[in-house]
Amino acid sequence: MPVTDQRQPSTRASGTAEFLVTLCGRHIRVKGLWLGAAGLRVGRVALDVGPGNGGAPGTWAALSPAEARDLARLLLTHAALAEQNPPPGAAASAPDAR
Image 1 (tube, one colour):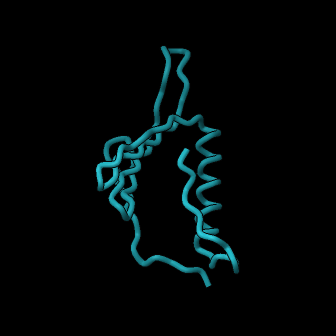
Image 2 (cartoon, one colour):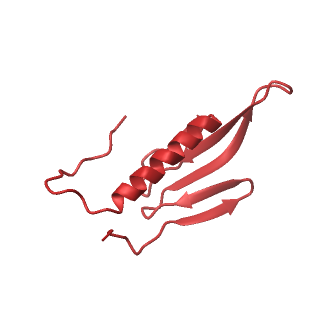
């Protein structure tokens, strides 16, 4: 049976951006971003990870539509895995600090 956390992050809208507030208070904002001059504009999806509760600095990324879809796929895959019980003998691992 999947293990679920009864607490849920909240999702909100602010102007043209949507954001998620994680359980630790970090804001993750997602919005469209258009770069370039008229006629040569390139669409991107901007992902802005704000500072955490302890004041740790945030970061951001501007993704192409294909990159945003790939990220969504990875997030959904790992969310499904996280809801499952860990396999026997699995060691806990920390997130990659890259």
